[in-house]
Length: 254
Image (cartoon, rainbow, N blue to C red; front, side, top):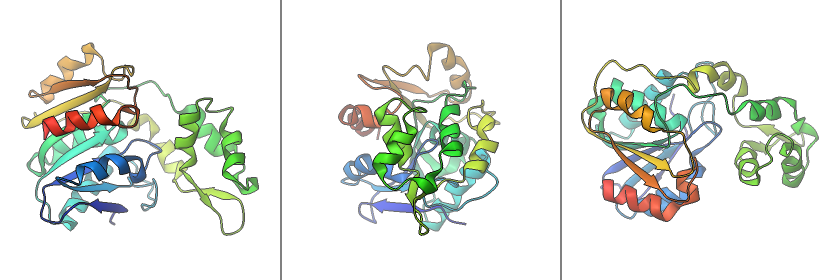
């Protein structure tokens, strides 16, 4: 099965694949992809169980890495630059371990291959407990999310997971049970079988804290060429918080 995807740029340019984070979708990367398409062919896509991609009970990192492989093969791309954010970053790191010959440059955005605390539990609650069939406008939906997500930016991000229901009200695009069943793996640490020796870069948000100095020895054990870049005035959503500096770093790398 092929994930839902979008292509930017000219067909004969070098490919970049971009992987989003949990509860995200390809649209989250539209502005970045649009800018990069001046020099590259950029492919953004919805991870399985997200956006408009297919739903499947398996939401493991190995399955998501194989979805990227299938997409690249469908595009006849034997090798590409890979950019992955958060959950997509972990998928990218595992993909590089599984299929190193298919990766030219690996860029993980604000993530380390380690165990994280469960920071999305309130969002799962919101998706489970809000009766979306009784909501009739985006404003109502935002108000319903308020107790679970006080930050407006987070609410706007979560709202992208809703779509109008033909029977009235709204419904979820995401396959919530599958994502929730694999949540421990999604926030868990990764295990690697090999050392990936090609160009590898980690881009961090200055105000994020998702990747710490203490994470670097484990990273460099499996990604010995790892370089680190910090985007100023940016939190976890680095590409949205400071897109110009983020793009400048991407262009320097590639």
